[in-house]
Image 1 (spheres, one colour):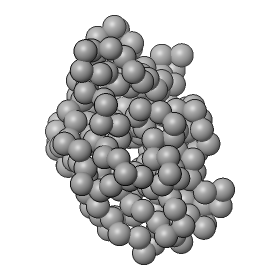
Image 2 (spheres, rainbow, N blue to C red; image 1 turned 90 degrees about the horizontal axis):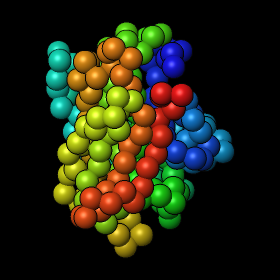
Image 3 (cartoon, helix red, strand yellow; image 1 turned 180 degrees about the vertical axis):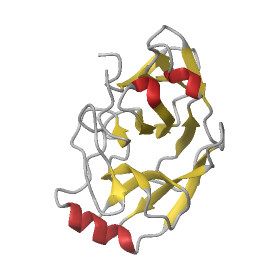
Image 4 (cartoon, helix red, strand yellow; image 1 turned 120 degrees about the vertical axis):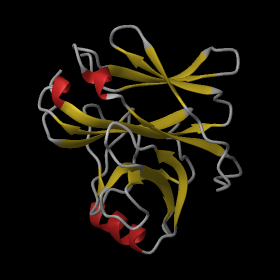
Length: 205
């Protein structure tokens, strides 16, 4: 599958994507993040909402580190995005209702990448997300059958609906996008190694 834009943020899952000023989302598939119907309304709500850093996308392969941030808006939205800093407008991610931060799943993930249009020309690909505390591990399933483990942070101190969640940030090795290899799904596993959640990426189709 070819990537159609030089800068993309693919929000994985089953619901509707949101596009707001400063919070860029798009999708090969429809989005796990629901957000508000009015992007301008969401952008305004995010403007003054506090931002909390919950994970990191580590520097690698010459690319600088980025943070993974959450934001709670006064009108009841929970937003997860990655950016160079908490104040940067270069944000990739999306929003759900604070009452359902994971969009009805055990995980909610967002894949961003630079480059293209061919997958082999992707220069930087990053995955961020949030999982329920019952998730013991997260893996990325590649199109060649291999998997990439994704490090999980300890449960975040930010309480949502009486629960705790674990965040993650991951930067792909450039070699992962070579030779026709693509990330095809993000998989959540329990402590016994059983799959308890999956979101496809739209690659490998």
